Image (cartoon, rainbow, N blue to C red; front, top):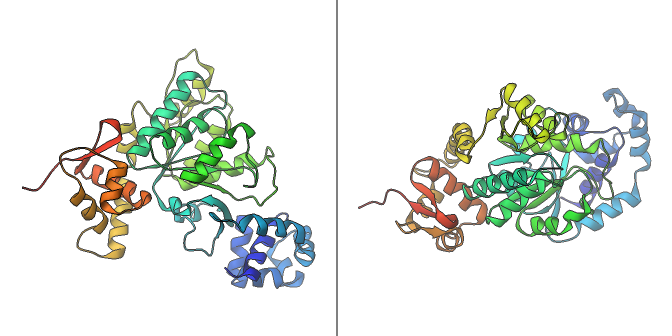
Length: 366
């Protein structure tokens, strides 16, 4: 993206009262962010933009945009706009898709099949262990774990995925120049190094109460399903689950003791139709049709006689278990492609996850 176009996008993202729906309408009307910003009040007012946004377009925010550009001018950072083909398609389809996502880390993870794990900040030790264990096993099975970097269940889910050598995405409620909560600074660094952090908020934006529900719609929008590990009856996790229902995503909940207040939100979700989860297989069973459909679409788009990535991976697999690193070295696939191919082969009954995070081929040609 050239500098004028980038500056126009940053102006749109900083304009007061301009959200993703308005951005999409401006693009449809004027064809580009540059044209929209330059259109002038007479052309913009009929689209229902607030007066403060019209005034903002005329004077801009040079200091704020300068801070954005300075932050973006570092390796591993960028901006994915609605015009970018890498913008995640699942998110593009929700009712209030963000106009753009600031990112730090590997943006290719956004194209992977994702499972969101959310829950209470004041989680019990058992809840934290459940979140960590489910995230680790789902990551080993090829899913990217998405959560909100919050204390409690979110943090445990991110750590579980990283500890398993898997991939994780943190959706933040602040600008990416700051970490909230501050005690997750080291975790955020680990996620940037091994995964991805994203936010719809520009540089300098602090953690405000109204930002967290906005973040939650992105968490559910990116994912095939949302697993709620622990949640009080009135919690942000239930907001994420509600968004998931609206967006047509699967909702999963782990039951708990009737004496645990943090289990009551999960029990409410189960009464409302969420799938009760006791093991990772309960989740994979439910999302398997989506995964097969997704894989079939990817293969059909390339129209080869067989999936070349899976074929290459099967050539590397024998009856002896191999680690993820061994398979990556042998196949030459990057981590994202390898994870997705492993998951597809497991669902097809060709590969099984073995002990110690290793993988084994089930049917070896004679």
